[in-house]
Image (cartoon, rainbow, N blue to C red; front, top):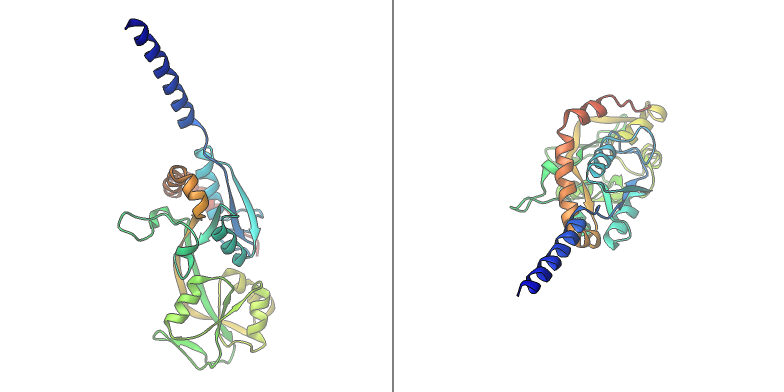
Length: 263
């Protein structure tokens, strides 16, 4: 009996050592898809200075010993590759349209996404040609017979326009192409953000104007493919919690406050 007891204790010790090693092992790194068009101030397409959301995710991951790499691609490709599991994650996705079926979001126990674990806010506005009376009034589009132009793959914009009872034209290129289509009369209204604003200010300031009110104001998230989440669920949940911790920290707020993006 004494021999069996020693053997049992020895085996138990080995099991505990293995469990401790497993618990302390770093989680699998992940590849995060970032849109190739800068989404200032959230992301800067892999360039310096990094966007606020890029810094946030990388700092939170570093705190947990998780390696993060970026893949820069058109947003439509980010969506498709996360849906297929080719990319592990995507940065700055809204909980709108088809997105909840594309990827895994941080969720509250009650069901909605957990905004405390978001990576920032995304805003956009409508643009029109100077002299046009096309507008959005009381939730409806007026003085335009044409679809409203949006960046291809932007589910939030598609959802908002369709809720207003109108049609969407997705433009599968960059902000320059979007502004060119508006200036050329292909659309009478265009949903855009910082990137479109910069193009308008530099190339079309005498042809295009922004409407004064915001069109959208929504939180965005770091989301994961179902494949990666299922294999690394505990690590992903810890990362989302760490993102909330870092985002509310004084050091992170000071860091992003010091960033100056080039015009």
